[in-house]
Length: 80
Image (cartoon, rainbow, N blue to C red; front, top):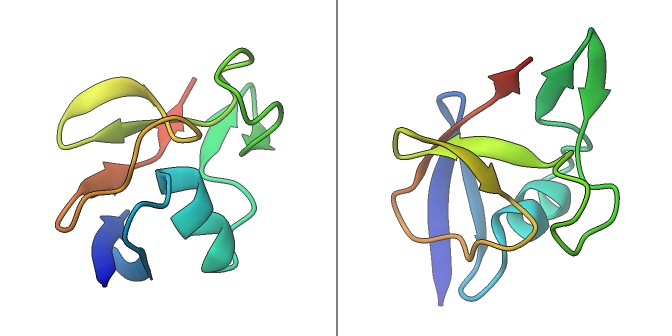
C-alpha cells in the first residue's frame, strides 16, 4: 500500500507506514526547511534537533522524522 503527500505543491508517493522524512528522502529530497539561509532536513532522525520540522495540514513545527505520513497530507517548508 502507498501514500501520496504534497510537499510545497509537488506530489510525492511513499510506502504506507513511512515517516514524512522517509517519504521525502526516498523521493530524493535532502532538505525541506530553511533556517538562517541554510537548508535543513534530517540531522538526528530521532526528534531531538528539530532540523526536520515542517508544517503539516496547517500545523507548524511537526517533526518529519517522527510523524507517519498519511495519504493526502499537505506539507509545506518552514523558513526561520
